[in-house]
Structure formats: structure tokens, C-alpha cells
Length: 408
Length: 118
Image 1 (cartoon, rainbow over the protein chains, first blue to last red):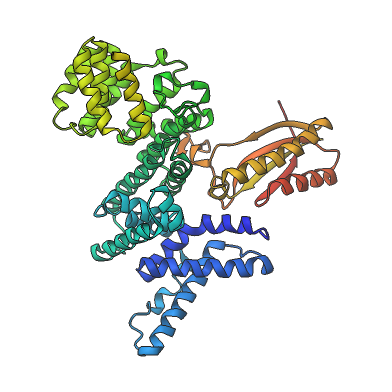
Image 2: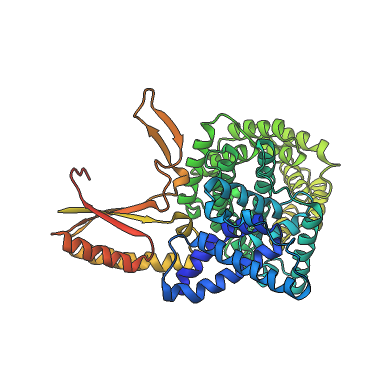
């Protein structure tokens, strides 16, 4: 543990547990974060000389807590001797007594604070990357293509909103725990999509977010190793991430799933996702993440695009529609329907969604593609032009332009 | 004598390795493996998926109990193994040291094989 790079790894690994315990103790995000920073500084000073502690996480919690208490005392000393703001003495021994089940609720709470449903998505993501993952404000700012000061403000606003909303610090009951788990899972999926949605021009700064989301999902699964939806969430992320190397061509152009070079898919990630999904299925409690992972697994299992089992994919999307009705799910099902029953059937399925999805790139993109297949070039062109105006990235826009060119 | 070298490490740490560190460790291990291969001492080598993929069948009861996760909750997890020919314990220890330099942290437990069907 003499090696500073190795110490950094230990600190990174200990971070969620330690900050979570400190948050429970001080009930304030800033204090918990500063306490952890201070503990890390002291670790970097003392571990290379004295050797690492037996339990680095417990050490960091203790040292961080004492440092923060000192700082509060010093601060208080200037103004008054009132000790009301100090945590109660009976709580002082808490970190040493923490067993893994306490940690579990602590870490879940910490992640829930970051993924609090009252926060808008960009704030959730920024806060989680800062607090749980320990990315610097500069790193996060770069990923979101904003200045460091703008990102600092976003994080400060999020913290203020959390303080106002208030967070329950009692040990949660089963329903609260399930609610938190759902919110945290959604937050992790948001982070993943930020990374997954990156294109070659933004891959360097945003791509790592997908890996970070996978790390957080692993952390969550470590806390809830038998929860089928947490198994499903990690499986989904791994299965989607397995295609990362095949999603863009050499010129940075978008390569659709059916055109991807499947030899570029990461077999290790696919296998792991598959195993996790099988473990989840054993519980007989299908949920949205498991179903989406099952769909991704069907794509992953097909050695060529033509071997894809569209019947099963259609059935899984139908199950997903029942569980989580959403026009986007129906839109996705339409792709399977087009393969199974042709473009006309798919078009009929998506026409009723036109109002709800009028501002959605993929709706107009798919509609344009279906109309092209039906040999209705004028209508296709209109849809594709709508899609072009709604493209989120240069790669998406190029893809649509290509389709437009092939019409004329 | 064939020895198995069981690689124990904190899995959360190892699976959080940066790509650079991962590549570096794997390259160093490959160099040690190459040397052992040239000496004709290297047997099967395996790296395991994380313990989250593990299922355990407890067969000490009837019917056996199937549970998610590894057999034991330990601080460090079994992450992989090497089978290597060693003429004695001293050589096995030397080999463990070499592997340890390539892959810091955690521990190698090494034991001679009793039965082996490669």
C-alpha cells in the first residue's frame, strides 16, 4: 500500500461507504464531504509511512469525523460554547459499530439524496458524480460541456434543494427502501445514458460516464445482491455497453444495431449480463429493467441480425407496455412489429403516438424509415426532415441526411 | 508437483481499476506467465467474473438450498487462479512473489493439487 496509485484506489473504493456514514453522522452533505476530503489528505500523509490500517474505511470514517468535530468546535469556540450543534456523544461510537447492513442503508441514503426525485435530471447526475463517484467539478463540467463555475453552481443549487426537501435519516422501512432503490436505479440509468448517448466527438469526455454508471450499479448490487431489478439494471447496462465499440463507424457515423459488426461486441460483458439476468429470472418477479435487459440479451445472442428473435422481442415489449405503459416503449415495439408483420403494421401501431411524440427524434426517424419502405417518398421526406430538425447529435443528423439522399 | 495459486483480492477495488492500471497489471502478469510457459510450468489460468454472478448450492440439506451470491461473505474474494508446476514450496513461494509484484494488493494462497483433471 506504499504506492500512491494504490492508495488512491483504496480511497476511491472507500468513498461511498465513508461519505455515507459521515452523512448519517453530520446530516449535512457539505460537512460529510469535507470530512472525507480531510481524512483522505491525512491518509495520504500517514499510510505510506505507517502502513495502511486494517480496515481503511473505518479509519477514514473515524479520522474524518474527528477532523470535522474539531473544526466545528474551533468554529464554535469563537462564538459561543453552545454544544447543541455537535452530534450527540452516544453517536460518536457509531462508525466502529457499523456492520454491513448499516452501511447498506447509509449508502442507499447517500445515493438517494443525489438521485432525489425533486431534483431535475441534470442536477441528479452532477450531484451523484460529485458526491458518490468523487469526480472533480472540472471533470463533470467537461463531460457536460459547461464551464467549471456553471457546474459548481449546478451542484450548489442541487445541495440547497436537498437541504430544503429534507431527507429521512431513520432506518427506512421496506416500502421506503424499495422507493429509494427505484429512484437510485433511475439515477444510475440516467448517468449511463449520458455516457451511452455520447458520439465520437464527445466520447472522450462523456464515454467514461457509462463505465461510472456500471460501477455504481455494481455498488448497488453489492448492497442488494438478490434484488431481481438491481440484477436486471446491471445486466441491462452491461448488455448495452457491450456494443459500444460497434456503434460508430470509422468516420464517426452512426451504425444501426442491425448493421453493426458483431465481432466488435464485448463477449465478456454479454456473458456477465446474461448470467445476471438468469439469476434475476429465478425470482419470478419481472420488472422494467429485467425486461429491457432480456431484450438486449436477445439481440446479443443473435450471431447475425437476421437470426434475431423478433417474436420474443415483440412479446417482451408487450410485457413492458403492460408494466410501464409509455409511447416510447410502443415505438420500440414497432421496430419488432415491422420485422414480423411489415412496415404497414408498424406504421399503424405508431400513428396514434404522433401527438405525444411530436418532439421526439426517433419517432420521426422510424416513421420516415417505414414510409420509405412503403415506397411513399414524399411522406417519408417530410418525416425525415422533422427528424433532422430534432437530431440530438451530428451523427444522428448525418444518418438522417443519408436516408434523405437515398430518397431522391 | 502441481500447485494452484488462488488469487484473493477486494473485488470492489479490482473491478474499479482504471483501464490503464488494468492493462498494466495484465501486461505484467502476461510477462510472468510467458516465462513460466517457456519453463514448461504453466497450467490452466482463469479469471472469474465478479461474485455478483455467483450462485451457491448448499447441499448440506435436503432438498439443497439455492442462494444468490458466493458461498461466504469475506473481505477479499476469490477472483481467479493459476495452476503452476513447482518443484517444492520454496519455488512456489518464489512464484507467488513474482505474481504478486505484477499484481499488487490482495493475497495469493498456494496449495499443491491432490486430484487434477485438466
